Image (cartoon, rainbow, N blue to C red; front, side, top):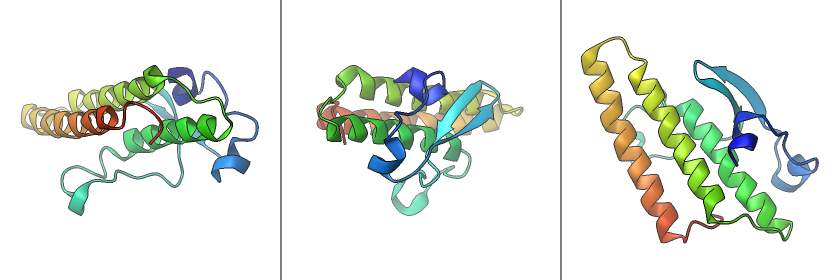
Length: 132
């Protein structure tokens, strides 16, 4: 999963036909990430630093779409794939938080990163770490 999300492995050849979009690459301070152009941080009431964590969310959305893709193709990925997508989401948010110059900004973004990452991980666990 991580190879797909970082662009080390290209999307499956028919991904766009099956899922409906073509992922694109961005460069972050912590490496390349593949993005879902239709993705967004789906946070209730859009509370917290939604805009700041948007790149992490778009990569995470692509990861979940890969899970859906492989399920549709009849070769579902195992639970470790979803866990890897969630782990990279957590890492990317904490990287953003830790890159902030001010102490209070680092604390604020770390707190939100913990909240968002924990919510995603709990939801994944509730779904058996399978395709969403």
